[in-house]
Length: 440
Image (tube, helix red, strand yellow):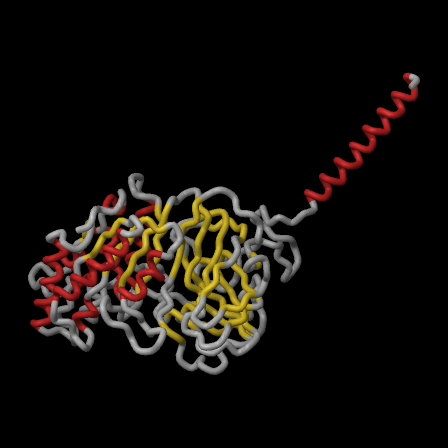
């Protein structure tokens, strides 16, 4: 081969390499991998957000325990309507995934469209510009959840801030039967006619709702947190008397402390309180409406993403609600069983003393004696790894059977916003650190 022919061949090879490289570059740059936090312009065309998640730890940022089925939904459910749940994050991350529940459904729940977005402002059904993401389930935009079942979505690439409102929207075109819900959200969510799942604006969401429907959890892939603390309780944990839409439950304040204090464990905080919940007794139905703490502990604590520790604040309703539990040993045994179950997973357990209810319509001296007996066992270290003394922090110094007036919402059982803040401020964050103790 002559030198001239050799140069010509080399030039041809280089030309081919340039062409192939350009094709590869254009193919990669034109692929929509959802790796950015913005979406393309144009209505109802969010990019595919089921991209591979980046590094981090999956932790719980928000959750609410399914508590029953919504009255009046037994026949049609929410067929042909979009449900936009508003939930508040405890920690942020660079991807998100959700859990949907059909626990109380009697027929399959068909979700044909779902999305997640950051709210434009607090308590608003409109999404912030560039944050709306279509959710997928095993790569599909639709999913069917069997009666009694739940489903976890794929990861959606979205930069989720901490201490922010998220909008999680679902659409079901067909009657689904009873709607699984959490009735005491203390947060307004929204409903729209038709499939408005990918509406960035909130104009179509004309119906307000005090419930969370179908949505059971939001997890984030986080580099700022390395675990989850689950707070397991009743209406006091549920925050039933806190200001609507203000995120003033004691667990919200606890999450603020975890983020702001330098020596705090970096955990997401998820609230698994159910109003009226008891340790020992289920509600009616199968599955039980308002299931007992013992029966729901696996589902609501042990199965949560990244769980490292649990706070247990249960027992008042066992004493106050009919039939009254008059034997403190049974309540203590139930609490100890929850601790034992947590220890099988290596979880740290912090328990709370039972707060006063003097002046409440259900108060009786014999019930007060049961409360005092349970609290004494907790303070003696016979129940949990550590304890937080909410009773001591909120009781009236002149009449310890009652809440201090400034901490009382007015019903002499549930705290005010100031009372919830006092609970969170009383909590020793170092008690959440470390591994579970040996068997008590």
